[in-house]
Image (cartoon, rainbow, N blue to C red; front, side, top):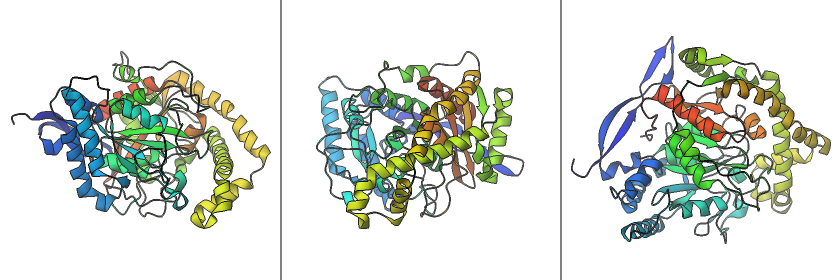
Length: 484
């Protein structure tokens, strides 16, 4: 087709090993990309095509808006969404391109932003009735970085109440009767349906990895402190981490390159130099990487489908994967993580509980009251134990490079009254290590994620390994195709 753009389109086809379907091994075919198919582009591809003049930001945004109009009534991924405002940003980006002016690495590319992250041009209500109508006067540091890179902010995506456990309105795009996960539910669902190629989320326990796994997309929770949190709702400052969603490992690396950097307003913000994650992630391995398969203490809580699928995965990796037992470490560490979260949540949201208890859900009120009952001794012990637990994990990472583990007990549970169990995520968040989920498994038509863990500040190596695994199991480029 004249003027068309070629893209590798992925159609997942599961194979059966034994009685259960597990690994998703897509095949690829070349497809001509018309303007109506622009929602299939990854963020990296979209930026490159806009930069080359093969499409425009306005055409891309218009295609995404059509996708939103078609799927939003069912999926309900957006808390705030202004189509005309998005088009105004896109036209401004195209004017800069036509004038030959310098543009950033995400020039004209649409992004979703979780509704606990401040934006000057859209409200930030934190999924909470008590914050309805709140309008920030400054962008969060991560939003400002996106704008400097040329991104178009499409809107604010749905979050759970104050990014905790009470669900929002979003449905899983693969099956509307199932949860999309939380708390970054809207961001994950928006990327999974092709409404945007990428979005921002946050994780305090499992709020990037679990929704990414449930919605069948790529998600990265980087090393604690890599992405500054200024302008992001504080829930538990010892744990809160800004993360990213996308449709390829390359996208995760590109987005983190754009977002990382030191900010003195965030006491956790790292002072180290900015590594070039995309360059590292796209390097090929001279020798195939090794994996430590860590079931964790939560293995008994995992579905039979998870047991079968990971059994197939480990068999597929052969001698590259070795099972390592860390059950006592992960169990004690997860308990410590929950103590830290409960106490810090009670401190951060306690004034709101005292002032406006009727504006909070019963679930959240109970969590805050529970946190207030934890002793100071128990809280400090939980904080101080973190380095001891990390030392045990670091030894495994030094020997194998990467930990492989489930992202969740199984595919997204049926029902919308819960966001699912974060038991496979909380320990890693507590340690501050980078974690990525890859959409490589499925069961009964629902995606399941493979979670990879790396050492602190070794995000580039982790993404390089993730890209290797996605290409090994997912085909030539490990691309994620939006849910129909």
